[in-house]
Image (cartoon, rainbow, N blue to C red; front, side, top):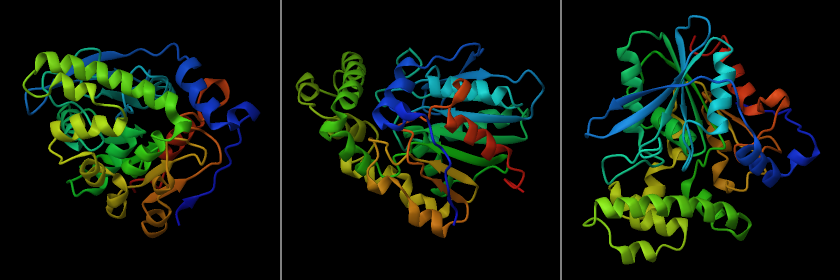
Length: 323
């Protein structure tokens, strides 16, 4: 308790994890959502771009949306969630993590799975507007790990923050990395590496003293990327140190707000340690739902609304949350 039984049963083709992942990532389109961008300055001289969408009716509730690795606030899972939520009297604030808004960030560092200081900056900014009485958090993949780490690592959580949902969360970063290095995920990992290396080459041009071209050329896997860039740029010894310190699984026992983790059994990105059954059984605030199907941030649903979007709305609307 609380292990949540799942009744998610998509049509036949979407029961294949790869089909669900690829369809949602490549072919799904969201239309009719209006976003307007706000740039906020960060404590270290960098910036974040936030893409806001508003309910047609006045709202004092906002959901902060956090995307996954090499995502942005225009990904289908962000815009689909924003559309569903704004249709149900929630405003949304979609974060473009550092370097993900279409413009390089100012510093050599960028974003990573444990950079909760940036989420804190966004929450503080929203609270400074004095517009919202309730704040909810919705993160996907890397973004899900980020919000759950934030809730459990000992931060002072404002009383306005009521609940969280994480979708396809790599609760153990090492376990997830091991899966991505598996041959079954070669196409996904190659795509991630291509985008990450393109950004790193841009940084090398701007910060030539921070990394050598030969070091970039030596990157063959995503773990190599984390060894050579992610860890060094963000104060970790190496990739394994980064994974160990930033995985949210170690913090779930101290999560003090209702938090739902929705991880599909057939998510090829997630290893066994990414399913925190023990933490859900021992912490009454951590709800774990593990449907048989869904892939990675897939969860096809009727009328172009994913099951994950429906579940997030349902969870945030639960009258017991935050009471």
